[in-house]
Image (cartoon, rainbow, N blue to C red; front, side, top):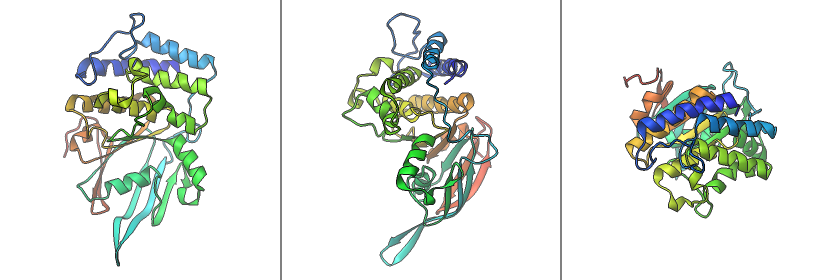
Length: 304
């Protein structure tokens, strides 16, 4: 992150905490007090951290996709996912066509059984279609070897899961560092990045805590920090507020919205919660494995 961008993001996130903190998040704190690193840092602290990264010639700019907005980061063309159930074929997805661009906040909604989880796995390049094509950064994922797909997926997509998916035997910092280890980042630089991200999400004082020692909101913030570890252009979230109380859930959603606005991240949320729609720039409605409709929206526009 560059210093100016980090400072702007930190100011925005600090205002979110001040307006909507809950018991799980903890009260907003002013970290200009020496030795106190329990909440969101001041803009001055953030700029110093960013300058330290630059001094080490360590820039987390993803070179896989520049995100001009003229070509999709993810593209699905006539995608089908068919499962064999006994002697019957079941189409979990049928003829999906979808393009997702940099800087979008895309929300995928639909009832149980509509194909949301299947679509999420394909959007995250965790599965291959039965028919049709999925393109990640203009590359057909079905034509990539397993190791090459894993490498590109690891650079392009950060994942946030409803159940957090933290490793229970690893502490907070170690969980955040996992994506950097997979990308074989140099350990001292990776640690600086991890510590910086934990400052951003307000968990500097929880660096040695195991997941079992954190609240649900804190665990989800660790998951967000982990998803940002390699600075991917895409954040894919599966029911990110499903296990959280309302206030904590709103904090998480505002955080993701600020990432889109200030960092130009592409946010994709798969959910059944219609409240999340208010943050969306586009909403994809799924039903029976097909796209029922796609709506363009403005932030905080009421559901139609």
